Length: 393
Image (cartoon, rainbow, N blue to C red):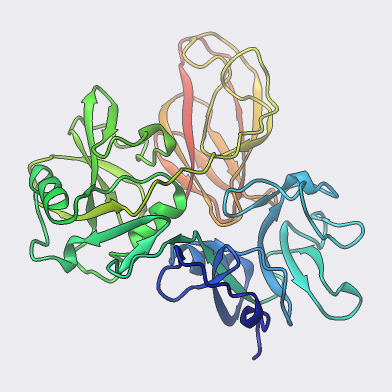
């Protein structure tokens, strides 16, 4: 099948810009054509395995999924790009009347160059059709000595070094002395996905040591001096006191470990000055009288929800609903870090079908990138209520 013929004409040779192996530089984007047709959800998963997301491509012969997801009708500002670059309000090419998400339609978006819809964007149900797609990862800095080159950094998995496992202090020394780098820090969901991809086929790499240490109680810092607050993917249910972190490859979450145990690790060296993208601001419509986000109609993960008046021990009977969303490339992991109520929390999928009944500290994962939650306080004094943390998954 011929796909994206204009790659030939758009590919640009920048002397100082490059792409990870398997990707092609097209203008300022690193793209990889996947001709095998998949549903939107499966296409997103395939792209995250590469540390990327679906691309917004504007030159195609056949219909192709776009890295865009819409949350409301006929409102391009509600359509978020998967690469965390913002909404389609600045530029879009929707067919007249779109996006449509209700009824037979849906929040996923494709583009076609055939017939009356040539060049137009159309929203549809994410599972309605299988289409070819293009994955996009960030462009990087050209360095012929770097095998794992991603977003301006060179990565060195310990599974490819003489020392495959080490405790924290020794691993940090190896990174500094051999590569003039540090144990890896992580600053976005896409980088977290890329990190996992480097160890995916390694049987013994279940827990990968990160370059972070606890300096104050529950306060971590990256060894390379970068900002820890950029992205925190710790498992909210992991409440230990150990001072180092590992990335758990099966979940993508970070958990506490003893710094003196030997584990596989990843070194990271900057190729030049890089900047961290500014995250999308959370759009929240909620009751301003407390911090519960009660009756929120659009809460972009990561975020926190609680019962109304959490910790007050009052006899409140407030009923709350939450609509939690994340970018189209991901699902939602909702972790109940505190639960003290005789009444349960009910969790529903984006279509209103109940998926879970929560009555204790646990976590639930949504089947798509939209989750609905409801809860009513018991009206009995002496109960704290609940607190839950929502993360992209």
